[in-house]
Length: 476
Image 1 (cartoon, rainbow, N blue to C red):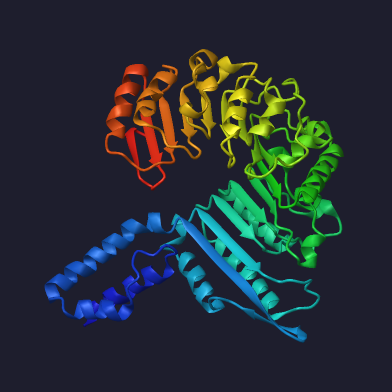
Image 2 (cartoon, rainbow, N blue to C red):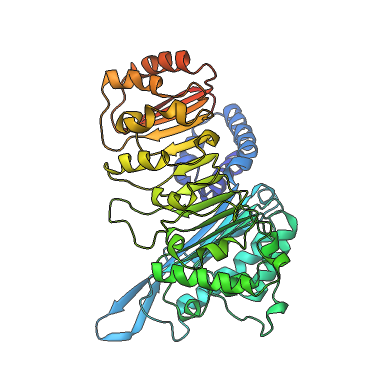
């Protein structure tokens, strides 16, 4: 019986504490299973469980995530009475945090995330039960994260940032933290003198604004965020907001903040910058880019191209003398227009396009001033859907090594499928293809025969189908 007690609690603790869970069986069922095991098998089973637990820890506990959503219940005629509902008890969350902070698990945690979200429809003018629970979870979370010596990244959603919590993050960054994401995080309790704020030197920072209705966030600007970031140490910066109007505010605030600094205190180390697509049409867009002289990758967050193209895109080309080191572009294809004169080595076109956009994309790529420099291309259309591009792709992109294409809404016939290798440049080494059609058993043999004949240096081929099936040749 003692052996049973040794096994069952261990299994139950691993199952309840793991976020992804390795089993969903109730404790009662485990006890019944163990009751019917002979003593010899029970000892073997117990030993196996302990060994499995030790082997699984580095994989199961790399990510520590806590999410609390507060739902608001309104009563007709009683607007002042609002009840907040938490889907799981705070005690349960705290027990989970304590488990992850234990010496046997904490060394394996590399990513942590705290999400405190709610559906509050009006300003919070007074303290509510949810506010107290939120503050408690924030305090407990920052007490726990200090226990993770191998922590690499942190994501905070709806967390009220105080100077005290920033000091916690400051201590973490000294160790290993390389990435910080702040989404809808209001700032509170700042020192009256900005220079007293703790400066974060985290290499990668993502700033997202959800425009939560709490009044504290409405008083928070991107200038406030930048005030506690050592922008000279930033290597990767992602900024985004939900509304185009607030996107303008982000750019204006960021530019005005940087414009007041000496030249040696701008984004001198920044190599990767991702912005909202709306920035390209703003008058301050180019002056802002001039503050990032060492950029290597420029990205724009995608939008739904099935609707009308949002206004404000820049149609004038930008000289590469402003950004001499930029060689990688990521974003919707209209955002590529200003950078057609750049010596781009990698182009990743994102977004959800309608079928008629295939010809536009092909026409745009034909306007690249340095097509011979391109080595990597991701595009949402199959070779058969844009003959004007792919018939000349060998001549246009003689150095192309990586090509990823995805069909839109068409079905490719067997003859067209077999002819795809003949449209590719022989320099291709990595080819990814996405098809909006079901899997056919003969596809692999047909495509690989042609690819290996056409591309002698082929190393990897991946084909995905609309039914979720896929096949891979070579090594990814």
